[in-house]
Each structure stands twice: as structure tokens, then as C-alpha cells.
Image (cartoon, rainbow over all chains, first blue to last red; front, side):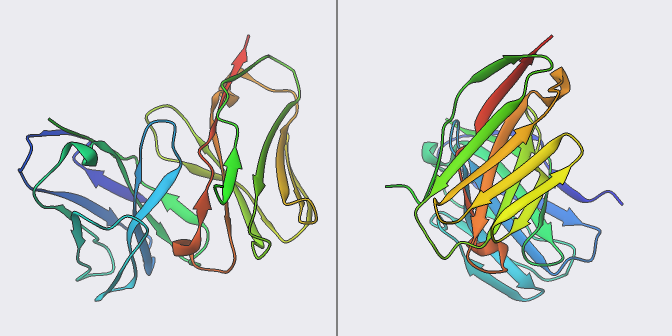
Length: 111
Length: 112
């Protein structure tokens, strides 16, 4: 199993640009999540999904959108990038809905 | 007041020392407690999981939960340089990782 994979690993965006962070898991997990981690801070939940076709907002959803058309994929869309979205983004999945497997992260800089 | 408080460190100890990492919390409804280890520029990985109060041991690692004091600890015995990482506590009222609340992490360095 590759586990949770994320692309790209790094990205620099200009203010106002848009991009999609890709996330795929091969463990057949129903639960998937997007977190952001700012320096010296814990993880903040952006969006989550409990199954294909079902998504819901987390703690910090503003400026982001998600979709879940398949069990495997959970892309995160950034529209009109802002400097406040500079962060490390982690995708994660879970079988139980509690114990979470994280991906390697995407480092995003918005300038 | 943050729901989960964790001293960010950094904490630096010599190899072989016993390390104690701690989190306090304010929500008495938390009953699932986890510790994640995060190496530099990597994703967090689950290290220990405990339900409700008590101790759990896994090799050199021991997790303790004291719900009466709203305090959880992770002990690392015979610490190794490979234990150098950031350790994040996380907790939840119920099953459902969307409810997980993370501490900010403690950065630990084990010096050879």
C-alpha cells in the first residue's frame, strides 16, 4: 500500500491564483480529511468527508473547496490565493473515523 | 483559553534520558487520546492511542491519561537520537476524527 499520497510536494502561488492540491489513498478508507499546519501551531481541520459524495466543513474552511467523487480521491481547491493560506497542507484518511493516517504534506507559499 | 495546551519546547535531552511530554485540556468530555510523532518535513504518524483513563505501554513508550486532572503524558524511556521529532497530542469526545483537537506540538531533540 502506498497509503496517502499528495501532490505537489511544494508550490509557490501568486496572490489571486488558484490551484488544486491532490490527495489519493489506496486503503479503501471512507473517512478523509484536509488539515493545515502553520509554524508552531497544531493541525487545523479545513474540510472532511465521511464517504464518496459527502463533504463537510471543518474549523477553517474559508477560501477552500473540496469534492469527493470517489473513495480514493479528495482534492482541495484554493480559489483566489491569499498570503494567509501560506501553510503546510496535510491530507489524511481513516478506517475507524478516529485513528488517522496522514500524507506527506504539501508546502504552499503565497506571495 | 485553548482547549488543548501543549508546551512547544524546544526540549533537548541527552541520549538515554527519560523524556516526559505533557498536554493539559479543558474539555472534560474528551475520552479518546492520541500521541502523534512528526519528523521534520513529514506528516504526523500515530504513536499511541488510549481510551479513557489509565496507562498504555508500547516498547519504550508509555502513555498516561489522568482525566481527573485533565492531563495526559507520554514517556519515552532510553531515548534515542531517532526519537528527535515534534510530538503532538490529540484528543476527541467521540469517534470521528473531525472532532480531533490537536495540541501545538512539542519539539524534542535527543543529543548523542
